[in-house]
Image (tube, rainbow, N blue to C red; front, side, top):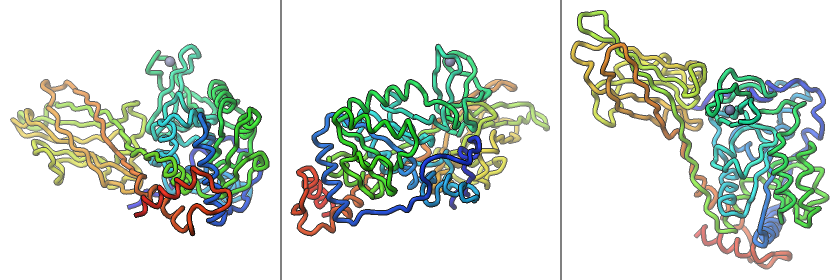
Length: 452
Ligand SMILES: [Zn+2]
């Protein structure tokens, strides 16, 4: 069962602006395969010779995760300009999984080649993929981050749910580090770019041998001017995007191809392994026993809520089933029902889940088993978490457990190898084309090995 489409909360939360600037809805084109291969060979040669690469990313790297772009033919601003309603998300932000491109960039950060990722995306997928904050500039903020309002602290908290507002508004929650109030950390139109992120992006661009722009139409300054700093400092600019950009004239390479295809060919060419994505979420489980309606009976109450507070959703959990005294691995019908176990898409608004069980005399000492039904964007309900726990010893007392669980695992490795083999595989004669660079030739050989 697929998750129901959601409205695009972020774009709807922004202040309405009729003129969003820049070009909208330009046709998307793809280079003929031999031409694209030659460009990627050239890119590989640049990367092989580079000590430092800065990556600039835009909405185009997240479209394969089900997140719409803004300026594409069916983009958010393109549709708005035509008076049409905002597009729906195939996957809610909170369930979106990092794409092959996100994971490839993570691999390049870990290898030390990419020194900084500078993103205009607010979907939080770079952080979710595991890119360290110290290697990331989020120029427009993030839908998942709230930041301490106290300037001397400014601690950031990454949530597993969308914070929900834009423009640095109060969230009603407190900073875990200092107790001050927190605000959302997502820019509205009028907000200046976050100073520290921008300064780090400028320094990275100045020091890079290559500025690699992926899935961004480079329309809006100052973000779109940053890659030019690399050119000014003597480095090269490489652009991978389906639409033309105003910076194409300054670029050494302009590749019209899908980011996932190009990055699959790039990591294969560089001999870099794409890391497996594994997401871990958590919730707070509170157990309480109280005297029941019959003599010596007890009522067991289990309450599952976000670790961020009762009012917060837990997008990855769609329901809760409870069994008592069941053996490990038990997955049968539960002894109790979640408040709405058949509504995975509505789970975010249903929390906290509360299950009450009336226990016969003597059952209080039994150990229990909680089964959580999880919502995976690709396969809701496919994963379950089974946790045993002990009953609270004292009636009326509550015991809290923080339950951590792996909610998504994605291995883009096989798909990347296949995409790379497909990318290079149709090549006739392989390395004979004019402009073929050494890095590209070895990439082609490597990709062919992968294919066999
Ligand atoms: Zn603080």
